[in-house]
Image (cartoon, rainbow over all chains, first blue to last red; front, side, top):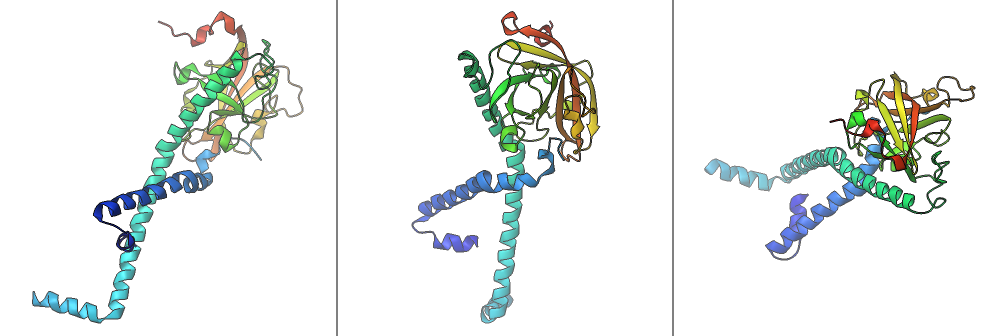
Length: 52
Length: 245
């Protein structure tokens, strides 16, 4: 998977490195802003209220 | 040397072996990726949510102090009398909670509502319960773990400790009566008179709720307190908040 991505990145080594970093940063950003806030809703210790 | 060369030849010759290799390789990468994502999630929970919550708390604190500078009526339902706020809009910050036991500088904004979006910015006031200083039960929920975790160490609070609600014009000093651990469905703790749903309130009470145990939340940790004294803001902070030398 990673080798496949690496092979399909264009340009010389430096450009590929920067692109790879940008891709990784984008994935982390998406995780922190979308996936994790959604996933944490099922964690028990966020329930702090009394309700029915 | 020759063995390796032969092996390489054989592998190249066998299409099925190649496919298996690719599959195992891909699975390995997936597992490593999953592990990294889990580590990131832990970092998100333990570090990032607290970082974001503290930033949000600071911003809410600024909003509250700004609103106190403006004339009454514009201040999110706070009529500016010494009796304290009458009501607050959902999601609006209207007071600070100070608990000296949890730190000299402990001051966390109180917002209206107990949804996760509200609790990520401070502690939340149960709508329908009394406002600070009023007759009835001023009930507040807060996170015990992650998202700023304002009530992380609420278990250290002891009977006799004070909890001060700072409003626009008045400090309301509550004294802790008792702490209890209850079931998550025990809504009686936030009744106007806890445990007596039909009773007409005459006392001014405070109830704090958070999860228990800290990282499991199968129960709720409850702190009950009653109003002991009121003090105009113009007289300075109540003695309980001033550090004794």
